[in-house]
Length: 598
View 1 (cartoon, helix red, strand yellow):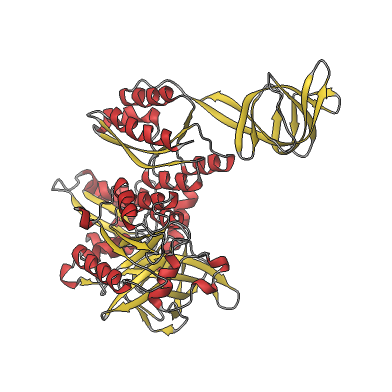
View 2 (cartoon, helix red, strand yellow; view 1 turned 45 degrees about the horizontal axis):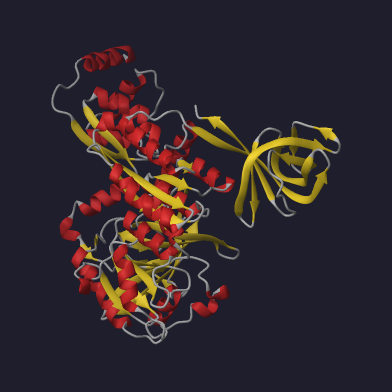
């Protein structure tokens, strides 16, 4: 009887439905029984069809991509496996009549000591600054205030790095940015970085010019500096809202809040409160008494006590809810920051948070995600390199190449900002998303990772730590000392003629403890290897006071009195250089080799 059933199924398989392909969305963690009901096929037939393709499944097994491929072909379906968060957001937006205006979520950004936390302190009439070490924000905080019977949620971050890390994970937690600029200092380096990060996130910016009570305040100068960053204020004919405030004197704070609410009305920030709660983990910690806790901001839905939830590879059940002041709550609405107790483990900041119907569903989803991670490496966004650029142009037509510029001096930055966009052609537009002086930093790599950009350094450097972060994030860093080589590489990439490049591989680091002048030999640096290894004939740069004063070949390497080819960490050695004698105690010697990139 079983044989006849299988033959009948095979016969049915040989004559698939020739009608139009039906599109279906299947949530992760769905089992075969639920899937059979959704596609209108008997469970027994579905199992037999799958097992005839060399699978061994039962009705309670969780659907995976391989099984979906068999089902799609067998029943002429186009099935997309979506995360439970995607499903909730799709359901929320598919019912426009249920959408209501929600309070705006505002991120405060700007240069250090320009008054970000002082502003929030003044708005809340609290004392956040006094509780912080050195008056500097040490963590992410989310706070809700009420103005004209409407709520606004503020996020006070320790810098744009946190903002961009969250965005790099696909988590858009803010509706607009309030950029704080001190009227006495003007636009500073971190101000420019904050502007670039906000623009990359594609969120509107409101400028708050702070410290206008100071005698040194020069508001017009600040507005002029902002215009150079493509933020032209409304009174000068632009579309950037600008409010002149004094957080210390509490001047024009009501006007700033009104502008936030006005912009919120213009961009129509809406949420569906009738779906399962869906939001973002803003921060997470392990409390020694309460256990894992996480701050959540909801985008859609309403979260209540007792609900099961999932976040990344964590799940749990809501045991308690607290507001930012530690007061217990019974429910959480969209845009309302709340601390959730009930996680079985500490979640990851930036992961999505999603309530589900029961704890079994939450566990199934996490088990499914873990099984996928065990079977394959996590999929990463393919980062763009100059070598790949031409191929993508041929395959896809026009392309945009985002670039981050770091140079030694502002003059070089300005030259490159003018020069590189002019290299654009009909197929590729070069877009400078950030530019600044100084060495390449972790913030630059994070922004490049989130924006799929290339970092171009001119007469600057990236530390080994930064290179490792860039490698992990699959961000390409190109460093040049000659400007025409930089522009030639970009030009060649645009026409597909880029030659194989050479990459720098870090070897090790040593500190100079003594300097010896040896007759007929020259200057020898007595060193102690602090990291990696030092290799004879390798290239090395000598660093003094964080500046590179010489780059050249290691011509001699000795351990005690013996010539050696390499010295490893925690050993002493003598190092000599070709044609360089100005070595001093305390200098850092950083060894590396230049290799052709495969």
